[in-house]
Amino acid sequence: DADVTQTPRNRITKTGKRIMLECSQTKGHDRMYWYRQDPGLGLRLIYYSFDVKDINKGEISDGYSVSRQAQAKFSLSLESAIPNQTALYFCATSDTHSDSTDTQYFGPGTRLTVL
Amino acid sequence: AQSVTQLGSHVSVSEGALVLLRCNYSSSVPPYLFWYVQYPNQGLQLLLKYTSAATLVKGINGFEAEFKKSETSFHLTKPSAHMSDAAEYFCAVSPFDSSYKLIFGSGTRLLVRP
Image (cartoon, rainbow over all chains, first blue to last red; front, side):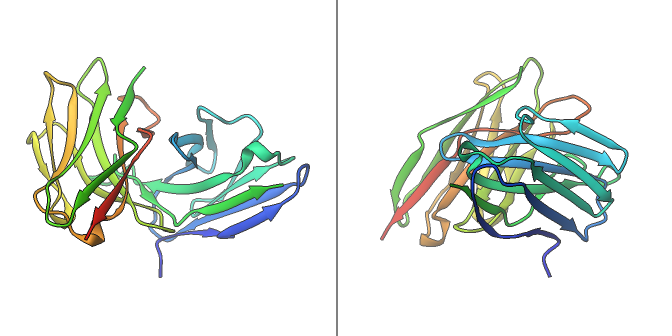
């Protein structure tokens, strides 16, 4: 089984709808991240969390919100989706207590299309 | 602010040829540097990383990268390309701050011709 899972893998929605993307991990890592990938732009950080009580904005947080329901779960919400939020979204984790604390492990991604 | 530049959005090589993917970083101090690979319809997988130990870093699948401080570069190489190397490759830098986030380059898509 995959260590970092994302649901759904694909989603098509309409402008103005509320959407939630979910991320779960079985790695026992404390840090979790949400990135979006756009062609030609690489990955950009939306939000990150160091534990359930610690949520931080990334470089492109406008229009997004997150919830860290448990150490293993980190959800990304689009309160009112717009077409320029069409992108590939990745969840990632890393471990403060590991020798490889700087290494992030990525989920398979969620492809979101906003019509 | 730290940044990463990957030269060439697409690189095409013949099977068996040398692979060279370029990455330059901007940082006031030597950062941690990473190469990730993304195969079609998959997430990102760590290829290798530089964390201020040896400047020549060996990774998985025969890839290696050399950290050159004087050139602020961290280019990825592989002596002989294989068809299975076709993927998108991302260089990333980790700034020395409390976020432990990664700052990614725009990516280079490697095409391998038979």
